[in-house]
Length: 284
Image (tube, rainbow, N blue to C red; front, side):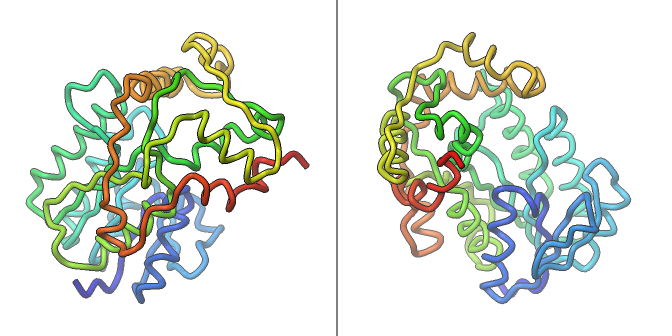
């Protein structure tokens, strides 16, 4: 597919900030949506738009060939994404790539997975060229534990369950491939790391990369909630606990080859992530 202009939502987020240069490397013109147009995205046409403002979104979509649809973490994220997808169809966008979540399904006990499934179902009914990417737990989510990891420990309610966690740089590389090549219409790709790892194994990888002793401690859902109470809004914290219960049940250990299949490169292992981000887990 010869895609001339790709619109990236969430362009300053963890995935979007890696996707923009990945698309640029493929010779694509990138238009980046940001709520703060005074902070331009390097190398991209930066436009000010807010998913809560349909008029600004419609303006951003003009002349766009393909869209990468992500949204900020919000309680009404599904509603925002559905409205954006409708506007993309009205604007004549030829391809829509939706960032969903591993194991998304309507009947899930995890609210985030239900919300993603709702958006997926809506996009499938729009009648436009679309592809769904379902990444597993982000390795970059560990950056949220950076303060305690720098002190030698971190904790979560996951027990010894293994999760095929993925580096967000690989999500971006897969998205860039799907946005710029043919053969992906109607497909859903589960995106995972090259193996399933426990949090103890993650701690070991971080310890090796930083040259420090780092340990993982099991926390109960109640302890985890208490530690983050006031840091995250209630809806997000409750959803995060549901996510971890999903991981703890062993429901996120399957390994997919989609990253390698789509990009021609193997997915990054946790050891590579730990090495590349070691400085973030080291106290100043």
